[in-house]
Amino acid sequence: MNERKQRYKIMIVDDQFLTREGLKTILELEEDMEIVGTAKNGLEAYEKVEDLQPDLILMDIRMPIMDGIESIKRIKHRYPHVLILILTTFIDEDYIIEGLSSGASGYILKDLDGDKLTASIRDAAAGQFVLQGVVAVKLATRLSRMEQEMELQPGWRGRAKLTEREEELSRLIIQGLSNREIGEKLQISDGTVRNYVSTLYSKLEVTSRAEAIVLLLQQIDPNGL
Image 1 (cartoon, rainbow, N blue to C red):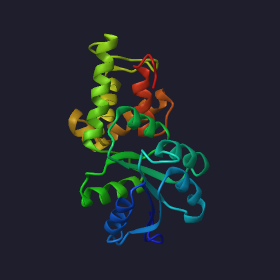
Image 2 (image 1 turned 90 degrees about the horizontal axis):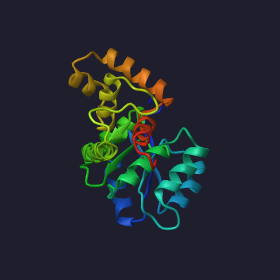
Image 3 (image 1 turned 45 degrees about the horizontal axis):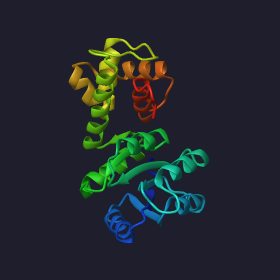
């Protein structure tokens, strides 16, 4: 965000009143964050976006009337510029993949401490893809299981015909590593990582990390999602 826009405008969506109020209390202590509204289900969130004009939405998954996944789909379809960060207690693999494929900018859990939560919000608002470590492990485990089931050891290339280096990069992306962390892991420069990532995105025909993760998992899963 630029200096003229001093605060991130945030909407909190959760069916638990105490959770909504607790998050509001924590985030309002931050000088660069403003809670513009809350909603108790996905439908209410969708209906409030136009009036509240949030920069970022913290979205729970399981809620009555309309769940978070369907709400994300509707909001991103109509308001593609609004960032959505999933914040939930559920770490089900299908929720993670469906949430990311619907357009969420990241997936974090409610047991995250306050400092890490605010850091995740700032990262997402800055355009970074946010994937909590334990969530990344879930995705990596799914990837490993799929490979074993399909007997594609030691590597896989899928429909995109990835090189060995691109396979290696893909695994690290699925694990939630940033470009800097990937560079350290592979002992290559940040610029080289960016070039590899750009080439990978081009091959997969995607424009974001979330899309790349979903597509990479789909490519090795014969049954899709």
